[in-house]
Image (cartoon, rainbow, N blue to C red; front, side, top):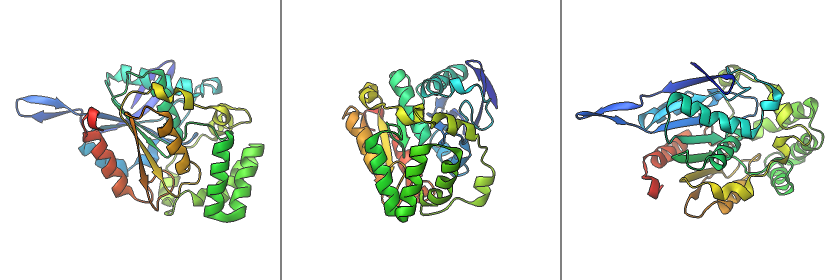
Length: 292
């Protein structure tokens, strides 16, 4: 399905009803809006596993501007502010109120930017394997280099260093070849990779030298987020190590955020322990807002 917002045609898909019969009334269920990783990927990584979440909420998958089946727009519009404002406009167009916004990896960047810019909009926030600061941040860089060396030795560390230092298509290709298999303990299914729609131009733009993916830092603004927030980390995640999620929680209001760590899991958790991840999300969805 498509909807036009802010001058761009966005693709979205839905699993589960918003309303369900409850005696003599139709009860409204929560809406879970899922923001995919990347940049340059699409929502398909959530599927089919996230279909089980439709038992707890209406689940909406959004291909963000420039990604997947959505219109490409222009590189000048490939920014955290634009993607964040698209979330609000998308919800307004569909009449979604108080969404639970879930962002994985790059989608977590967008989810944080959205919640900072619109602190009264979200009902809850779920941040999975993400960071509040770009890949050029020295502390994050050190965390990532050390994590990849633990997972893949010096060759992995050097591939990351070259990608971060030169930021060319060639160094990103080498990074993907050497470091991609280290993201998780369980590799993706070949069919899942085949059905992913990619736009590598978004990655090259966002992560270019001095691009926003390199320079952004949301740390000081995270205290503006007021909704209950679940921050999820994989202990073996090399690209957004646990220290990055600890940093997010440390920067947020102590009454809003809590960290949930998964041992033996890499980036995104879903490939390595889908059952435990989905169960944690369901519990967070079901919890009262003041007890999340």
